[in-house]
Image (cartoon, rainbow, N blue to C red; front, side, top):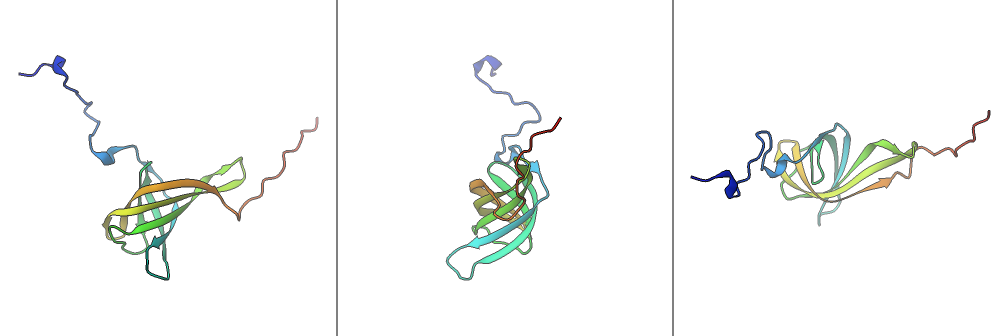
Length: 129
């Protein structure tokens, strides 16, 4: 019989040891992607996000993708930098699961970039009065 004092770790009932159980954020945003590879021309597509975590993206693609394909993905981020500069989340990753057009991407690299085309930030004005 094992005793609790012998180093057993007990997880709360609602905590999973499953790797994919990390915090995922349900977002519905437009996705644009390029299929990376040796073939030319580059295949492009679009879709909608299902959810997003720090290491993975689930989205619906406009056509079925293949497990193992490398993708470059961009998402127009819904928050403006300094109240007026559009941002894009840029990711590179590999398709790890598919089910029809539902696609799971392992994110290998990500960064936020400002959009070249977008809103211009007006200079701050001093209040009068």
